[in-house]
Length: 463
Image (cartoon, rainbow, N blue to C red):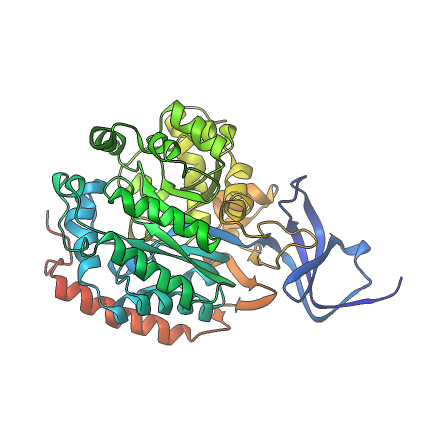
C-alpha cells in the first residue's frame, strides 16, 4: 500500500473513540492532517500512514478532548472561599461582591490560570461565562487569553443590566446591575463586531433569566440569531428560582421563553435543575442545551438535575466546571460526580454510568456548543488528549472508560492537542509560561482577596 503523509501519527495503547459504536481500540492509531483527523484504526491497518511527527504512547489512552460547557474562570481568584453557603447567600455575600471589586488585571490573571489548568487537564474547549469586568476591552482580552493558551473556547459575556425588583427582593445588591438594557446590548454588539469569530468565539449571556430584565434576555437571543452564534444564561439553579420567576412573570422560565418564541437550538442554560415535566418536554422539543454542573450543584446544595428525563426528551447536555463553586478545571473529577449524584438522587446504581459521563464530557459537550469534535473519527477536528495509564491508581485497567471516569484526574494527562497543535506536553504548556501565569495569578488574586477583607487572620471565611 502506498504511504500516506500526514502531520502527526499517534500510536496509543488504547484509543477511546466515542464514535457511534463507542469503540475502544487496543493498540490504536490516529492520524492528523492540519486541524482534522484523517484516519483512525488498529495499528496493523494504519502502517501506511507516515507522520511528520510520530508519538508512541503504548501505556496511555488517547481520548477525545474534554469540553467544559460552563465556567467562570475569573472566579478562580476566590478559589476555596465562600464555603457553607447556599446559592443566593453565596452570590449575595461572597461572589457578587468579589465580582464587583475585581480589576481587569486580576480577572485576566485568574482567567489565564484557569485556561492553563484546563489545557493541562485534557480539556480542549472551555465556555467561559465571563461577567466581571465585562467592558469590551476586558471581554476581548479574555477571549485572547483563551486563544493564547491554545484552547478552543467561547467567551459568553455575562450581562446584569438594570437592577430588577426580583434581584432586590431576593437579597442581591445593585453593585453589578449598573447599566441599561440598551447599554448592555450595545456593548455586546461592539464585542461581537470587534472579535473575529474562529477557534475562540464570543456569545451573549444575560447572566440569569431569574433576575435579569427580560428585555435583556430577549435582546440577547435576538442578537445571537443576528450574529449566528448561540447564547447561554443561568436558569433554575436554586429550588426557589422557578417559583420566584412564576410569581413575577406568570409562568415558569422555560415555558415563558418558549411562549416568547425564543426557546430554540441557540438557547443554552446553565444548571436547569428545577424543571417540571412541561418544561423538560418544551426544552427537548426546542433542541436547546443545558450545561450540567454536578460539582457546584453539590457544593452549594442546589440539587440534582433530572438527567435521565432531559436526555430522553432530546435536550443536548454537556458538563461544566462552574468556577469557584466547582473549585477545579478538571472534568475527570466532574465526570464521576455526574455519575454519583444521579445514583444517589435516585437510589439506583444503574441511574448513570461511566460511559454516560464520558459521553457528556466529550460528544455531549461538542453537540451542545456546536463544535465538530468530541470523538476520534475521520474528518473531525483534531482535539484530543493522552492519559498515562501506567500508574498505581489506574492499574489494573480492565475497562478503560470506567478507569478514566472513576480513577483518573487531570494530573494524569501527558499531552493535549487542539486543532491539530500540541498545546500541552509532559507538564509544560507549549503556548505560555506556566511559571509566569501561576506567579501572576498568585500575586493578583492575593491582592484582590486582601482588599476585599474576606479572610480572617487564620485564613477562614467569617461565619
